[in-house]
Amino acid sequence: MSIYKKLFEAKKGVGTILKDSKNPFFKSNYLSLNGLIEAVENVLNENDLVLLQPIINGCVRTEIYDIEDNSCVFSEMQLPNITDPQKLGSAITYYRRYTLQSLLGLQAEDDDGNTASKQVNKGIPTPKRLTPEQLKSIPTSEVLSSLEIVLKTYSLSDKEKEIIMKRIKELKK
Image 1 (cartoon, rainbow, N blue to C red):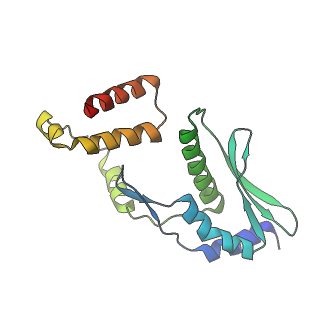
Image 2 (image 1 turned 90 degrees about the vertical axis):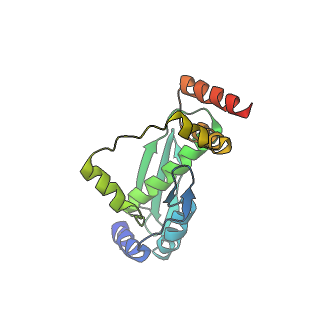
Image 3 (image 1 turned 180 degrees about the vertical axis):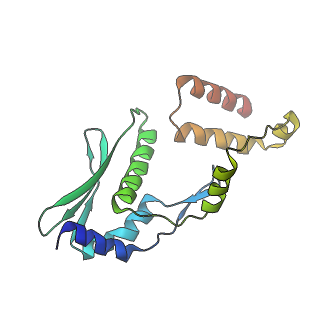
């Protein structure tokens, strides 16, 4: 049996994958890398397919090998130029998840698809601005937590980092 037939059989065995993690910053659910691997690895192995995810030449590469004939299919994404190890680790995890999901053509359960499609149909909503009184009513701990998450999660310019770090210092006084 060809690797493509085996992948077809494996994909039929996977089914819908439920989102298993929460993102408190965006108040949304997502499918974690561990949840995705847990959902697909046994089915791949049952079809004599092995999943590997090496980093090669600055790319996260997801490979699925047929152990019977050594054929392989793969998907890869170039990593951004990130020097912070924590941010790089987050990018690697993200790219591993999405190259695997893409390679197998899998979709996670979409718990907010209707909301997203409504926004697309209506156009981009105009962000609401908070009044100074509303801003003051947000607990300092929530603002600090959100700013720290932004610093750890996103690839920011030096100027953006400087602004956020300055604001964190002000809030900690």
